[in-house]
Image (cartoon, rainbow, N blue to C red; front, top):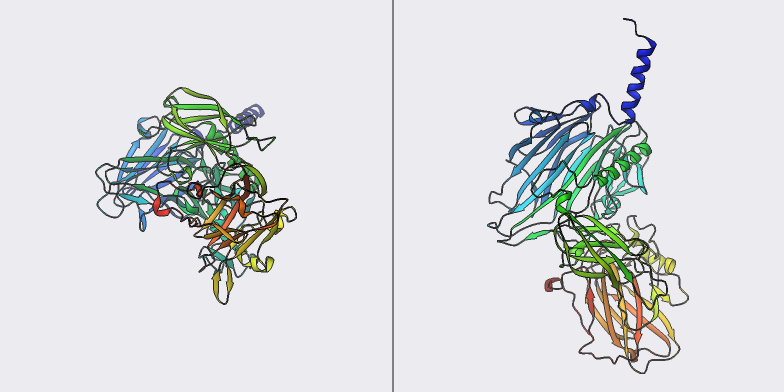
Length: 635
């Protein structure tokens, strides 16, 4: 058969149009669902997925003839031990044979059977026509007649095929080749830290905690192949279901070609889900997208994956989703307003890029995990718009770099199809007198201090006695924060025992206050079971036990933020030379530590110190009602 040049040109033009439109012959194919007895196969001509019926395992993903998984993917949650779906009920929620091949949705649903974890759990997988990947969402339920239950972590776990994928992509700063899973390693401490002992990566250390991310601005991570030119990604259009707010750190991907979607995570001091007996509770996590792409080097595949994440965010909430626990846009609301920062001690206060969010009134939003949270960045003028909010009553929170503490506005109602305009909101950060000195910048991290820019390295705590043989001795007006204040106050090994350290802050005053109240404002970016004893010129002003978030040993630069205001009699200050000592008294292991965000000494000479009234006050990181975890104050 002879083909004319006109026919060839027409075919070429048609192909170009299809490619530019993101279409292909495969993408025009209807979705099919094939029952194989113990499993089902979903296929849309782009990807082919096989799901096991009784446990929801994702047995395989095929794309362009390649099998992308090294082993079945699965859902698990921790409630005393790892829990998995098993002996579950399989259901076809949407059959493509009855909707013109538009989509297939299957669910695997497990009802509590009286064993360890009193939750009903369902996992849904959705494949749509033309999509280069599938969507997954998970529902946990606790009916009113169930006993008390909890889980500290829940996640969806995949292991990519290492014959295809060798390049990890977490964010723009953490993208690189990763050695194969059979590379010999030496386990360090903690057990997640491993040193490669052979091959081109010999001597390098890998640790899953090096790839944790703050949830707030993170929407995609995955693996790509330098040779296969394939990519496999987890794309999140929304973080509304994540626990702990925008500063909560979650696992993403790590050595072994692991690829993780975290639903709830208690790492870095956050709270898992805990439900009381007789309490009715349910929550939908997701949907997130398992996205696959091809045809480029790791940089091109990463760029495409980020573009896909932006497109998914723009489409949120997903209009094709049909589930009672997933409200569409018409059933959601918008909250907007403008925060006006008024700080008389700061001539140019800025709220630019501040986090503004909606969460429950209590506990502290860092400790919330059962509900939904909605966070955005404010503009330079403090204006904010929070879209796609589930209906209900919320507290509005805000925090910004350069400002201690946070803003709070209670009683915010989000209504379906409506805009709640809060108008102008005045934020006046509290002060306890004029500032005498300050170390650090309030930003809820220790990034401005020594090693704050290279903290993701194993064993960094062992460098402290070499770099600070006489401990930190910081002189106000002379010392530099980025070299002479360590990112963490750590324990040191002496005579085979881990012992605490004492740091000093030296400062001069032209004259001593004759009366009044001074307040040491101690903002902590992280702490791990530390026992802090604080003194001014040898006189103790506070001692307390911190919470535990273990950020230092887990390659973090922050964990659970909290602010402790410590008032003391201003007459303890002297004319001339003064010394503040910060003693971390809890020894026993390397983990016990403190990361300071900011220290500030304020003085109010007009306020007479009252030892009965003026007690240390702490905010952030815990429920005020949580007396079991409340720090001890000893005067």
